[in-house]
Length: 125
Image 1: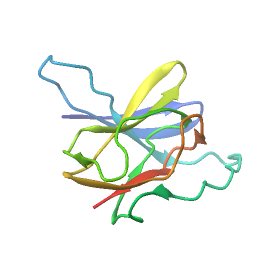
Image 2: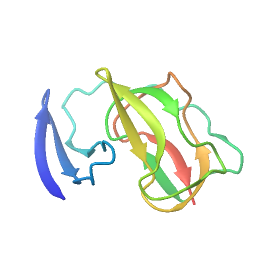
Image 3: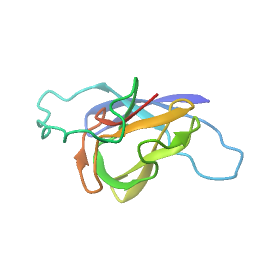
Image 4: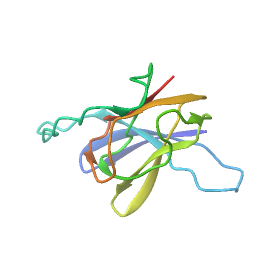
């Protein structure tokens, strides 16, 4: 793994990049380090769309964008690194992956929703 600090449009991100085995592409996980002084306010998040309530582990967006696809629904068993939601940002598809093995408890967004970096997209147990 390699760690980088990247500045994009005044936003600073700490990025960790894992080297893959050549079997497929993986997107880096980016977390905002500092927010801009005049950040626009996001619309309130929609109510949770789940089959079994909210889970203990939050799956958050690493970048702002639009929900392109939902890969795993509520009740789906996932392994660490499996894509749960795919975000589209600047014409790129960015998978948001499960941080650990478990079961998806809720999907809190719908396809087409605009999301900000750090927004909770789903929860899992």
